[in-house]
Image 1: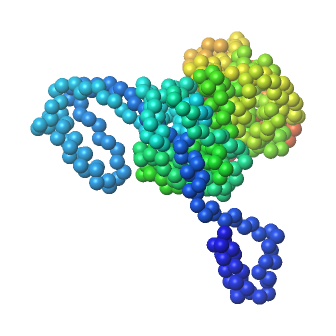
Image 2 (image 1 turned 90 degrees about the vertical axis):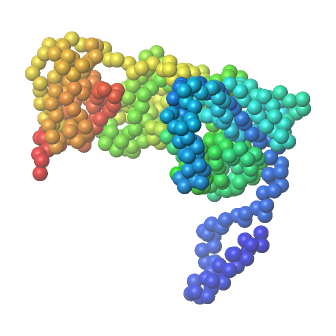
Image 3 (image 1 turned 120 degrees about the horizontal axis):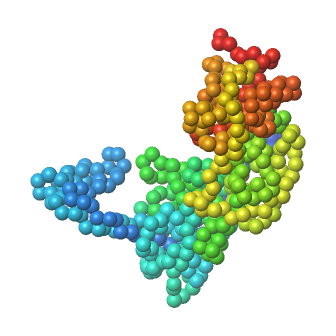
Length: 511
């Protein structure tokens, strides 16, 4: 507290000496001042350490065949151990003198070390899934060095969380979950864990950022912190200053493998629901809408008369899923889900996943130039290997016709025919019109369209002929749209693509 006050006083004196024309505290009402750092974290750490555990898991690694030497351990570049192990392994490689590699290597056990924390005195412990993944034995070591065998109650691969259970002859110390949504960038946090197998280690830092997507999965929503987190901290808790768990330390960004002050924690508000599901069902139960989505770009928004490029665009609806039952269509833009704004595509999976299975929720859509609300009842998200593939469109028989030029877009199209199916290896039930030619330096080529792509919709209207395409393009021009929106089927699936409209229907010419 004194240090904080002295620092402020020093700043005032410097300001006064530099300029007497401006009073030192003239802008005081608008000035943001930091809170003082705690004098010590010792009391808080002493209270929390007993509830943080070391998690050790092991699994049997299959034997190696004859002539296969041991693997080189991974060390940071320049480590003194690097050359030591390299020399040792060179002496034991096939064909090396003194190396016995004619016999199969015996089975061995690989061990993984991590952290966890106790949430129930009866012995329920939270950790990361990757700490115990593939393990056939898991044990937990308490702060007093008591080691207990642990049973895996449930695992969630998508959210990288796991719940363990140990049996103890006495109630165990616990820590509670807090509200991660209340944390602000700059708030103090405390991390406790088992880095490099050293045992209970305490580090302090602040919340560096929130809502981080590090591309580990569709539910990424990490808290970033500069509290030192290293290998072995995985699964350990991140605490607020009230001693509540507001995050589960999961990953670090590091070129060397050591902490550089960029660590990531799963928010407690996300973890609480998953842990509750693991305890009750053995797996996470996430809400599921049954749609494939894509980002709404400014061009897509303009082509549909949407003021802002926000929301998630529906690019596919799973047959028999909640979205289909709610009559959500391809081309709809989901603006709100269960009262929450969908600011961009990546927000939607998290919002839907957090919603309760079986809950009826309102979904605000943008369709035909206006908002409408539909009600849907969420189902439980199927396992990844059971999710239905994208629906294949139904077909319309059509005779082979001469390709037709779509003025102003730089492409030629023709109805689906057996000849084109064979040429471009199209699905037997394909519908729409096939792009047969794309001119260079045109809107179509700029968007990456190519022969063999199939136009299924234009301006959210199904098309089955070149005339259908031309009709919708001209309607967009008359409505003074800058772009026309097409639903394109290609090898990678279906995607909405906006094409720039040139006035008068003339193709752009290379300059």
